[in-house]
Length: 338
Image (cartoon, rainbow, N blue to C red; front, side, top):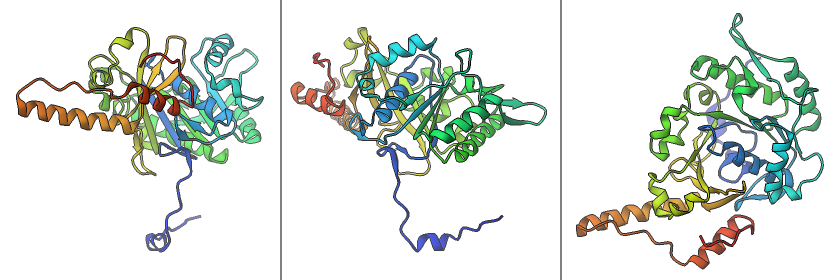
């Protein structure tokens, strides 16, 4: 049945407020994609967010977030033992209660593909496992579903076939609608050629292979990328020395059609430390990164005027900054000198 939307009627009343899964970053009910090169921390980041939601913590690195059951579909971990180790490394996971963070598997201990590409019909079909999972999800009504990784959940996927990828995104949207519109995040890989680009470009959805395919069908996309010594923020945040002990990753939203610009975006991302023991800590949020970028630009301009070297960007009061980080990390800190 046809429905007509009259723009004048919409303008006659205030727009409905956005309900947030993660304040000013991720709206509730979003069907989105988190992308990045293999091994750059996508799974670690999404698992930490999933634990925050499932534990009912109410905040994730200082930002209010939703609470409720979370289902992880797929996953690149080698098995239950690896997943157990990941959970034990997380302080947040100790607050979990039964039934709040669930990973479904078949009789062989695997999570088969949910979707399959039908070459003859030129469309995506839900597999028998996908049908079983769909009925189960309807019964538990999760707040958040994470599909990691998308290419393992959709057999026959060709990441550079843009029409096929667009159809995949549209199929996932229809599937989520049947489930009552939970927040669904897929995890996928970028084109590796983009790894040499600047950070803001690596976090942009067009750096994803077939960037106009799946993201074209979705309303939200966020990138994850490892920080390298060549990135300007590495020097500005004094991370070079600490890279010997930890990895640092950036996370930012580059597509957000249904909301104002995200506070963590591809140009001013949040920066996290992936510690050697698997822990995740916030180093700087998007607001602080924005301030440092503005200050760095000012320093560069002033230095050019004075015809001297670039003025080093200082950290200010280390004690106060450490208190700031502890607050953003929910009180968690290794008490190491930052």
